View 1 (tube, rainbow, N blue to C red):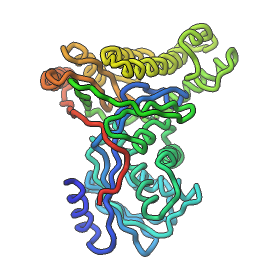
View 2: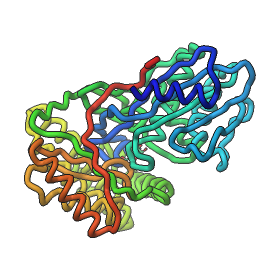
View 3: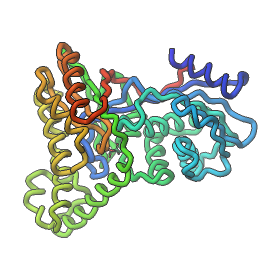
View 4: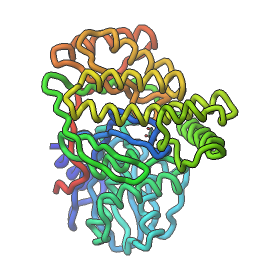
Length: 389
Ligand code: GLA
């Protein structure tokens, strides 16, 4: 079991003794509803059974000592609960530190330091929310160790607060929410305007969810992410001159078409169109699933990709290659990029008997076109954060 390896490594790095807990928080994949969460729209993500493991022990002083099995070369990185500020050289530890800072901002200050060792089996930079997984994991650990009175939904909000205000990515709520509220076998249909949500069972019977990882790291993606976000904000402000709305997600397609000329710039009009249409597509897709119409769900996934490619322009050659090749394969019900884009992963629903062909053919075509390999994961939908040991 992974948790035993993580515990053994903790003892090797930080020494034995005391009370050591081992925890887990999942990664997430979004089935549909992309770049809608900061536009007051709907999303439909699910937590995965892959994620981040954390072994932790309280210290008697104020020191923080961090170690990641994914970045062993960095060794032990040290800090203190008295100086929680983002620093480039703090590397990945800016995520757990950000969450500790966010708790303190909200009046929940840890009264001692920690030794924390992490291991993640989410591919790094894949767009499956490894950072949100670390954030929710940290929050869950703090709640458990210090008895802070927070719900899992609070953990999502605190994680998002830290990502925005400590780590500088102006993200929506989807990732942290999907992770903190995950439920085995279910996707979460979340209205990001109200945080109302329902769980929808994902019963694919003769099909699987396959994630194709482009191995293109996001890199500049985060700044592009903030740019898309502000394009939507400007478009919203222009629309508010002609129609009373608080978010793009309030618009139907018809309303958007009737008022879109208020948006003065062609590029911004395309961005807003995506936000409106993608939200409507997500509502329709969840209804299709309720009616057991997986074929329609898949078709809407494909349309989502086209919109992200042509109107929102966040796909790029790597993700387009993966998806466009997938569409050619018999037994593929739907395929689209997932997450922020600009690299990362695609998500596909593939008939059981087509999975091997899918991996071989998409893999070969990707290698030929892009020059390096893609990785493939047949994934299961898992629960939210938990204590394992
Ligand atoms: C990233 C963000 C989310 C969401 C997606 C795009 O994953 O963290 O809040 O905006 O991109 O749907």
